[in-house]
Every structure is written in structure tokens, then in C-alpha cells.
Length: 214
Length: 188
Image 1 (spheres, rainbow over the protein chains, first blue to last red):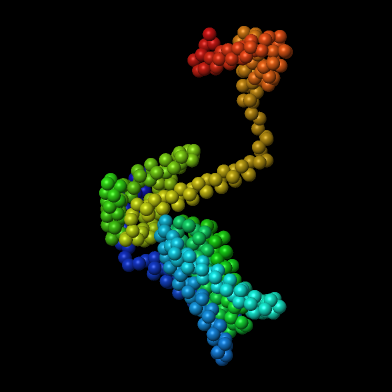
Image 2: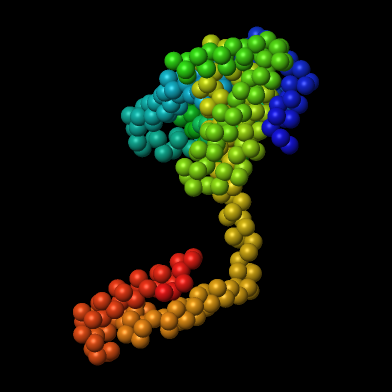
């Protein structure tokens, strides 16, 4: 086909006006659907979260939720810019990086200060296994929703965008997982909730170039 | 500045297109296609690739501009947005074509040695013919030094000429040979 013919064809059907902020709206819808799906998966696999629990458990849940929701917000703001060709929000990326790496680092140092003898025993437990399997499992649905909306936009750095989509969906998975009374000391909880999110980020970076082509 | 005038003109067309003005949108695409064509041709030549697929790339970018209009931020400049799309499509194309040549090479491994190519032999015979047309001294000198790879001293010892005679013969002989192979050279 000749290029002039193509141009005529593109204009022939008329062009729909673009109003409002379609990218933001699409991203918000994807996040809402993804979060709802993640919680549904949580309810079907782990069951309803226990209603009665101690103040300590609530502390841990709130801590994880604050950490994860901060990641969701920073990540979504990054994705909103990454949906436009050629733009990368570097500052937001730095914030995400700091959240991702400083918190597990702080957790590890706190853990080491607690005493190296106890650390090896407490690091591995039923808690760690649940977090490692459940958070990526819960993250699948939000990740799919984000990929669907990112593909309709025009991300020009697919690996980075995929990684951040992984972070956001991992963080949503962590929130869903945290409703089931996290146990143990606070640094331990941060570590076992942070590590799967990093795992999700790596998976997102690996899948990004393939899934986010347009 | 011309670039600024161009930017504001293209951006005005884009904004009109975003508001639903189909004519402006078509005009924008029409204005962009020669620029994109020049961009891709230049980039492909720069990396020594045949600019054969230029038109495909131009059309791909035009389609992306059309279908992904909503990713343009009205507050931002227009030219960088188009450039980012064109660059992305170019990188994507290069990656894709590299992958496809690799796959062809893998597919053909079994058949790689099944065909014979006699061009190498033919040209060797041609050289013998050409050397035969040279005076004997020049032909021997070139055969010894250039084809058998002997040093000038060894060639002199083998042929019974002096070293300087070998050097001069090689030099003159090569000159004569290049006259022979020149498209309209008649060898005289």
C-alpha cells in the first residue's frame, strides 16, 4: 500500500476527539480491577482473614500496607509517564528504588543486630514460605491488568516499564497477603514482604520486552 | 527559527486532530511522512543497512501516531513525541530483522555445504591467463612473490634475477595486470 493511500484511509473513518485524561483513567481502572482480583485470589486460597487479632498483628499489617501502598503510588505515577513515548520519570524511579532496597536492607541490619544466632532460625519459617508463594500468586492478576493497559499506550522502555509494573503488582499482592496476620518481628516481616516484591520486579523486567511491544 | 515554526505548526495540527478535526489529522500525517522517510533512510544508511524497508517503517509510525494519539500530552512539545515513536519503531525493526537473519542461518545449516560454488576456481584460472600475457620475467616475479609468498631475496635466488630486478618486475607487472583487468583495458 502506498503511504498516501494509508494516510487517506486513516483519516477516512474520521478521528475521534480525545478528551479528559484517558491514560490516567485507564491506569486507575486497571489498578482497581487488578486489586479486586488479587483480593479474590487471596480469599479463595487463604480464606477470609481472621477477625480477631492482637494489636501486634495489626501493627504488622499496617506496616506492610503502608510500605506497599507507597510503592503502588510511586509505581503508578511512574507508569503514567512511561505510557507516553520517550518519557521516563527518573525521580519517581529513584523513590521506588529507595523504597525497594533501603527497607529490606534496614530489615537485614536490624535482624543482624538482634543476634546472629537467632537470625538463622527465625529467618526461615512458615511465614517466609507463605509470603514467597502467595505474593507472586496474588500479583499475577494485577500484572495482567497493568500489561493490558500499558499495551494500549506507547511505552518506549519496555524492560523498565515491565519491572515497575511488577513492583506495583507485587506490592498489591503484599497488601492482600498482609491481611492474613503477619507473624514475627517487624524487620523479619519487612524482609519477607520485600523479597517477593523484588522477585515480581525481576519477572516483570524479564517479561516486559515481550509483553509490552506495540 | 525554522524548527520552532515547524514545531508550532505541527503541534497546532496535532491539537486540532485531537479535538476531532479529521482534515487536520490527515494533513499532519501528510506533513510528517516525508520527514519520517528522510529520518529512516538516513539512520539505516548510517548503520550500513539497505533502506529498502523505509516505507514500511514510515507507515508503521503513521499508524502508531494515529492509534496512540491519546499518549500525546498537550502540554508537551510535539516533535520529541514523534521522534520517540520513530526511534522506538527503528529499534524494534533492527531487533526484529537481526533475529530473522539469525533464524535463516540456523535453518540452512544442513544445506550449507550441499551447493558448490566455482567462482573462486574460475578467477584463479583467469589470473593464470593474465600472468601468461605478461613478459616472462614479470610473470615469474609476481608468481613467486605475490602468489607463493616468498621474500624478494628468496625470489631472486630462485629465479636467478637480482633483488632489485625482482622488485621492479613485480611493480611493473602489477601495473600491467591492473591495466588488463580495467573494464576497457585492451592490455596494450
